[in-house]
Structure formats: structure tokens, C-alpha cells
Length: 300
Image 1 (tube, rainbow, N blue to C red):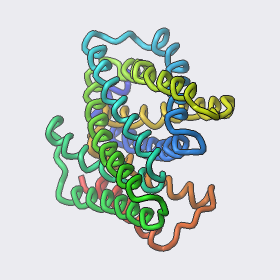
Image 2: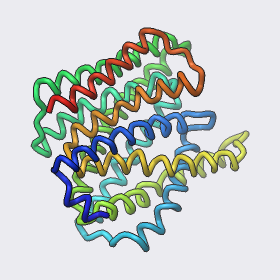
Image 3: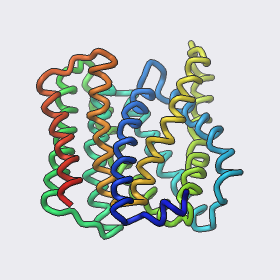
Image 4: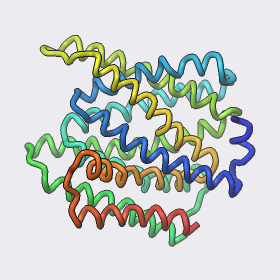
């Protein structure tokens, strides 16, 4: 399987598969974000997800895929630091501000910075039409965040902190997307990188979650949290694994932009499944985000 992925990278077939993987990753990431911000403390939820992610990924890393070479192993060490910083910023943002405010800010900042980073590090170039698409997508997402922000009734200091953490999270999304793309391209077998990535980057938050759980005056019941963790771990394979494979098959910038249609999927989930009110303005902004993704994909 890994050899086939490598063989079609950079081909029209690889580009089509990359598009499908990026969109699949977007849908999965919308669900993943909602899981972390749900009814439980975001630190505990992420700890449960990461704990199960390490448990489920370890047998694949140890017994199914080839072991990483020295270069891949060193890159994985760097990935631990990058993703730990990202997870901390997201937990802090979700702790301070609402999901509907935080999520669009993170996802709107990420693709713009990623496209610039991909130009610098991978020599990728977007056409003027594609830059228009990036502007539509990021602009639509950020305007959606402003729309959600106008409806929030929380204290201003907490909101400011949440937004600061969200912007930092968006920058770190760009950093880890670029770094992970470099890592999976350096690995002889992309599934070796993926399997070991999900093991080594998932060992930190379970420890933090246990320490936080022990300090709680009224800790939550563990069984529902564990089920949420298993679901999140399976979704993480699709969300993070899908976009990394997409960056291995085709342009990093395009995969990053397509993945941020997760904001549209998040809004649709809220509308059709959770019964949330969307309204004409949000529908327009969702359409703008989707249009931006189409322009980026068709304008290359």
C-alpha cells in the first residue's frame, strides 16, 4: 500500500486521491473538534483521545508497518514538540471561549499561513486565481467567527484570551501541516510515519489528563469519557492521517486549504444534526468558504 502511494504521488491519479482524502479529513476534523469541546473538560477529552490513539496505533507501528529509519525517527521527535504545543493552545482556547468562536479562527488562520510556508519550503506556487480562492476561504471562515462572536455573552477578558490562543493555534496548524508534510515525504513508507506518529505524539496528554483529573473536586465519570476517547482516536486516524497522505500525494497548500472546509461541515453538523439555527448570513459565509475551496482546486 505504501509503495502504491509513493508511486502515484505527483500524478493526476494522486491529485484526485489527495482531493478526496483532504475533504474526508475535513469532515472528520469537524467531528473531532466538536468532541474535544463537548461536555467534558477539553484537557480530559484530549487525554482520553490520545490515550486510546496510542493504544490502538501501537500494534500497527510495532508489528504491521516497517520500522522507521534514523531520519524518520528524528523527525518524529520534532513532531512531538510541535503537536504538543498545538494541543496546549487548543485546550487553552476551548477553555476560554466557545467552540463556534475558536474553531473558525483557528481554521481560517491555518490555510493562509500554510500556503505561504509551502511556497517557501516546498517551492509550491499558487496562481492568482488560487490566491483569490484562498482569500475567499480564509475570509469566509474568519467572518463566520466574527458572526459567532457577536452572539457570545461571556466576559471580555476570557474572550480576548480565547481569541489569542485561537490565533496561536492557527499558526501552529500551519506549522504542523508543513512539518508533517516534510516528515511523511522523507519516510520511505508513508504508513510507517503515520503509525509511529500516532504513537509518539499521543503520549503526553494522557499524563496531563490524569494529573488534572486527580486535582478535580468533582471529577467526571470515566466510562463515557473513555467511549468518547475511542471515537476520537478512530476519527483522528481519518482526520490527521488523511491530510498527511494528501500532502504526500499532491501540493501541501492545496490539501491544507481543502481541509479547512471542515468549518462548513461543522456548521452543517450543527444545523442538521444538532438542530442549531444557521440563518442566511451563515449560509452565505459557508457558501463563500466552499467557493474558495473550489476556486483553489480548479484554478491550478
